[in-house]
Image 1 (cartoon, rainbow, N blue to C red):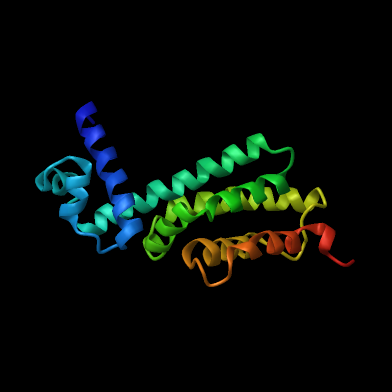
Image 2: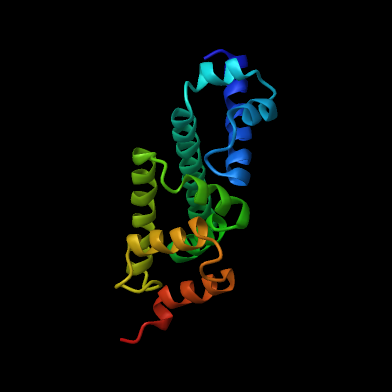
Amino acid sequence: MRADARRNRDRILEAARDAVAERGTDAPMELIARRAGVGVGTLYRRFPDRGVLLAALAEQYVHELMDALDRAAAAEPDAWAAIRTFVVHSVERSRGAIAAALAGTSAPQARQALTQRLGELVRQAQVDGAMRSDVGTGDLMELLNVFACHPGVIPERFLPLMLDGIGRRSEKD
């Protein structure tokens, strides 16, 4: 891909991310093009329809989550600390808006890779004795879903309490 085409694609995705976070998946394509600084024709050449644009946006978003998970795993002293850091990062308000908008959009391979990597950390945290053995990756994904995709259902102040409940220290053996 030519450098100018790559820049246009990146600008379109950035503009789409902001517009979708603000207005949902029905954000006008003209608004996205204007915010990206490209013509509507350029937008449609890169993304022939809204579904293609949303799929690309969802895939980019999941890859960003994967990068955040990898950064947390590299920066934190253990798997449980990495999981906590990743979860808190993932549900911050700006990410929550885009997560909510893209909740039904697919990026199956990217999501599978993210779930697999998170699962590795879950297993390691359990082996380390830092995470309850009866909590799995699916449980963490549901926690992310509630706090990122459905903000306000449960006040955000409960997230640390729920994470503490997942930690091994709270498990009664």
